[in-house]
Length: 379
Image 1 (cartoon, helix red, strand yellow):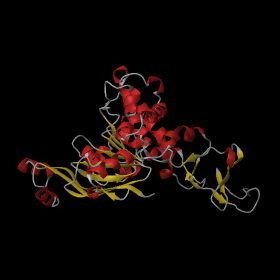
Image 2: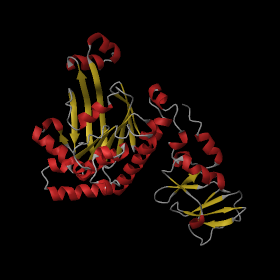
Image 3: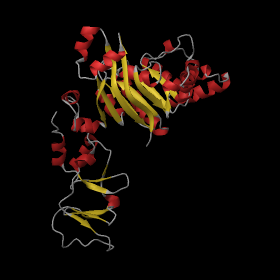
Image 4: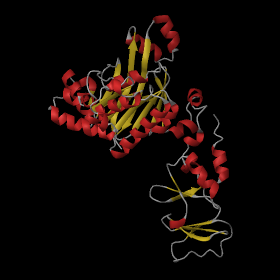
């Protein structure tokens, strides 16, 4: 993977001298105390991040943490006081207003929390708005808008107006408007936070389906940890304008960089975060057999016995209750599967299920005891 978005030492100061603020805050002055003394607030403090092509990158934090300001720095709606934003290798500070607008039109789609639909326009005309701004002929833009509405399940509603739709359907229109432009980058600012929980879950599922269908680089702003974990390939956790930690949900949960990060995860469902590959261990009885057409198990004591070939591909499992089970008949877990998803299988089998990676290589097994211990992460 390579970076599509690169943020380098970004600062955004409001209320006074940015040079003074950066100098003071860079020397570990308390930001709240500094604001109360000077009226100067750092919305974003020395943030450096890279967003890879094709990933869903979630920026998470409570209100006032700086996450929405960071998104506006990404698309150039807000200019940094210091630092640099590069999109597809282009520095935003080097672009003219016309070049920046062109970059936004052609490379970025934006989905807002407030839906931002025009009440007097039909659904299809709302979905086609970005294409209209780009100067596309009416028939062509309506065709593309209709296809985008089909992808979000709203083709039958295309002639209605926004006030005739539910909140969830209105947000689908906002998403279709962004998709109609077919941008490689999608910026989503608290896009689902105004929706009811069930509708919100549906929209999250839709976004994941669309991402599986055609990968985009998505920067998703959220204040909801469950949403961040469900959607994010990686999560950047922000507080007081700073990034506390950035990484996969599992690393933030198991290896928190600070007490503040640990505090964020105190109420999280551990089983919904941990990957089965992270808790897999090698079984007591493992036989690597790359010669015989059928593994020689008579001399191997123990139950069960896992048999691999020389390239670590699973050949089969022998258990006392079921005898020899060919690999094609063995129930397995895949790396990337969450512990919660694995629980029913682990509980139902007479043998600990093997964990295989994406290439089918054996990584270990997961026992019921390992499952229980994995839920004891110290938060």
